[in-house]
Every structure is written in structure tokens, then in C-alpha cells.
Length: 305
Image: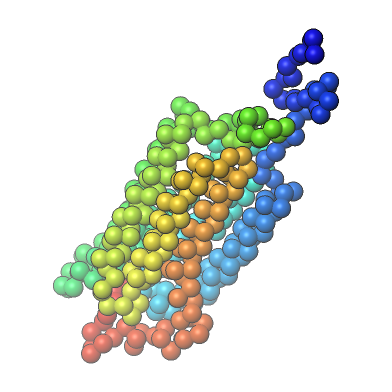
């Protein structure tokens, strides 16, 4: 009692308080039940998305896939697969390589996915608006517009992430104050402002996609996917709106788990709302996947761009 010494920051006293012992190091790892469960879910979702991708490739010459811009559909499916895989980067010991890489990869892949949805929605509206026989406009819409919109939206996020990595990148850090006897290894975002700008940019694209899809929902709906995009963007926005308070209220490995769960659930929402109805028609109702289903009273109900 006469000679009290303070233990180092990475140690804490034993029960008798006569010896300093190392604190337990904790992070979201594959050895944890939580980490392994999330990894299994990632693999399952990735396999399901690959199966859908295989269906779209096999039936790529059918009407329902051509009618909804197969190029953007393939890009969206590929970005969903990559988004599932990038969530695996959040599981494991934080390092100087993975801390900056995982946030930037997640931000850019998700931006490509949301931009693809936005490009699909805007293309649907412009295709229905181009009712006059303007061949030049239709060619422009089919070849250049959707790709240009996708590239422009994706480049915007890339510029934000470049500034983030250049001036204040994420780095591995630890917190010994959250729990007694534990050191929480985590990735410090470097600039919290940049992190929320990345999330906000995706949110703005998602909200704009939701608004555009909602306006297009009343268009002829034989193969019009605007209604499905509306529901998918509603799920996407709901997940990320709920993510912010949940992310701020958790600490340690549970904070990382919340972000992984948000990535998985929002990606699953896009996959289920946009692609499952098409797979149902392709596999279960092939009689609807014919050109005659697009024709009403001699007029085409949908422009296959």
C-alpha cells in the first residue's frame, strides 16, 4: 500500500493487485462466433449472386434480360459479388494495408452498384420518353448515356477516396478504455468527416435513384423494373439510415460487425428486389419471357436498350 505503481497502458493488475498482467487483445476475427457467422453468410450470399449471374449469362439472349439493359445488369451483379467479398476484409486483425483498403474498396464498389441502378432507372424513363422515331436519340441512349452516367458517378466517389487516402487515411489503432482488461484493436478512420462524406455520397445517389424510380413506377410494367428498383432503394436507404446510429452506439468488434451487416443486408436487398423477380420469370414462367409479351395492340410496351 505504501508503494503503488500504475500498470502500463497495455497491462492491468491481477486480483491481488501485486502484479501487472497483459490485457486480452480483441478484434473481430474468424475464430469468433460472430466473425465466423458473418463469413459463412458472406459465402452463401456470394454463391447465390454467382448463381443469378450464371442464369443471366445463360439466358442473356432472352427478351427480359435485353429489355432491362443486360450490360448494366452484369455490372451490377459483378459489383454485388465484389461487395460481398470486400466485407471479408473487415474480419481479421487490423493492419496498415487493410485499414485504408477496406473502406476505399467498399465505398467505390458500392458506388458502382448504386450508379448502375441509377443508370438503369434513368435509361428506362428516357426510353419511354423517346416515343418519336428519333433513331439518333435511341442510339445515343443505348450506347453512351447509361455508361457515361455510371462512369461519372463512380469517378466522383473515386475522387473523394483519393483525397481521403492522400491527406488522412485510415490506420490501425487500439482502445484500452472501452472494456476493463481488454485492448480493442480497430481501424481508426483517420478522418471521420471523409468517412461520412463517402457514405453520404452513396446515400445521395440512392435517394436520387429512389426518386427517379418512384416517378417511373407507373410506366407500362410488363418488363419495367422501376417498381423493383424503388423497393430496392427503399431497403438500401433504410439499412444505411439505421446504420449511422447503430454504428455510433457500438464499440470494438461490434462496430465492425454492424458495418459488415449493413453491407450484407443492403447488397441482399438489391439482389432480391431487382434480380429475383427476373429469375422467377426466366426459370418458372418462361412463357412470359417472349417478345409477344412486350406487345399490346400492335405497339411495343418497352424499348429494349
